[in-house]
Image 1 (tube, rainbow, N blue to C red):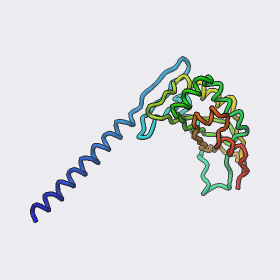
Image 2: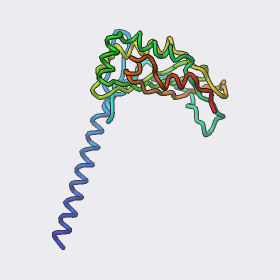
Image 3: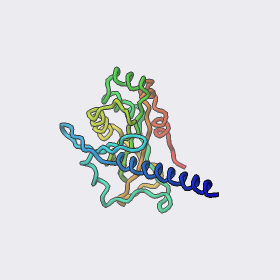
Image 4: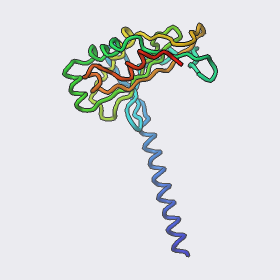
Length: 193
């Protein structure tokens, strides 16, 4: 019986050690790093599944705004007006050769846009693969062109009070290379409920 208890205790100690080391690793991953370009400063944070990047200058753009909550408000959402404008943002930020290389390496990017009640992008953030080949300068170009060239439209109730929507998309560079981003096309044709 003593041997059984000892094995049980040893397993618990091993499990505790594994859990503790995972928590410590996760804490180390979440440390912020500041990355500067010629015109912007970005905060980079390592996540368990990728790297999050956000422009520090936009951090306060949602102050005083409520996030759209479907449980409180009438139905409302945002969609992009043009798939082609969205696709073109990638073609401006990345050369054709670069898109081909990133597609070959199976790169993908998650883009999150906070869009206000007037359908303007007020904050963008990006999640990249841990071993990404995408540079901060390319992210900067992508962000700049998203804000300047991609238009959104509110579907459903139009709010006059300060509010923002959290709109996200995952883009594979293979889609960019082919000229068709599936979710962007679906967003463009979205009609609501």
